[in-house]
Amino acid sequence: MSRRLLFTIPSYAYLEHAFLAAGHFEHGVVDRKNFPDGERYLRIRSELWGRDVVLLGGTPTDVDWLEVFDLACGIARGGARSLTIVMPYFGYATMERAVKTGEVVVAKSRARLLSSIPSPEGGTKVLLFDLHTDGIEFYLDDRVLTRHVYGAPIVTAKIKERMGTTPFVLGACDAGRAKWVQSLARDLHVEPAFVYKSRDATSGELAVTGVNADVRGREVVIYDDMIRTGSSLVQAAKAYLGAGASKVHAIASHLVLPGTAVDALRASGVFASIMGTDSHPGSQKLPAADVASIGPRMVECLEVAGDP
Image 1 (cartoon, rainbow, N blue to C red):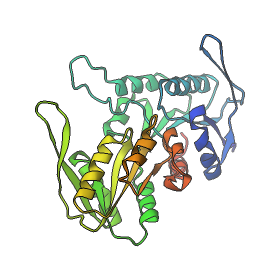
Image 2: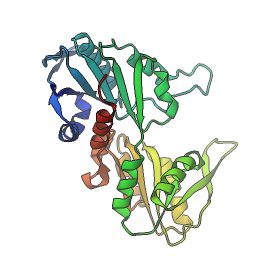
Image 3: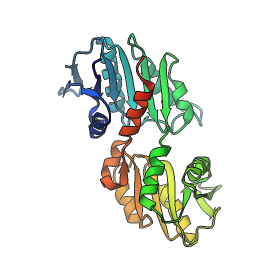
């Protein structure tokens, strides 16, 4: 039986090596160029007919969304037997519902985009990693098989590696992530904690009002599903330090870190370390020692799922 073909979009080229090392793939070849007017040219050079194909590509930007969509359509129409899209990061995941009248639920409209990809003979699967909201996988059409891969084993392993035998408390930025943190804390056999926040009636800004656990003289590892600008993370870290924590570390499933976010987090002076997975290209802004690869775990899930 021939090996599966692995195609990777440009923004996830950094993750391709981990996939090739962990699984039995043949490297898929794509010609790319940009025309002067900004339009993109794609040509799939690898023979697709009857092949089982894996497309590796998260969607941090709108260009990435179109790259995944265009390549997937080309793969399906090119005669692939089956298609599995591995999506380490689902863009617009925080826009999963409308809060104000007229707001567009972009997470759902992008799921419709994925659902419209032509289905090969052997079907289409989408592997998603640590979604902001579990229900997003069900936004895709029923003809697309989805699997939500949880990153808890990767996150807990990284925490254990970093903390070693040092006693610590696993903290949350706020009560909204308390259940996640409680679950991870059980796996790590440590005490969970979270900060209390209140919203100012006039400005609408959130302010920390307290910490629910005794962290005096102890190190705290704060978990959040993603780190973007990190403002709420810094606020929480200051609260734990103010409550007597000796050190604060941060870890996230998705290290988005746009612009100068890393510099701002370091300049805050409140973190002993910042860690996470390589599910997002922003993770490459941190030292390799602080980043755990999702490659082996995602390849394992591909192997378990098998092909139709």
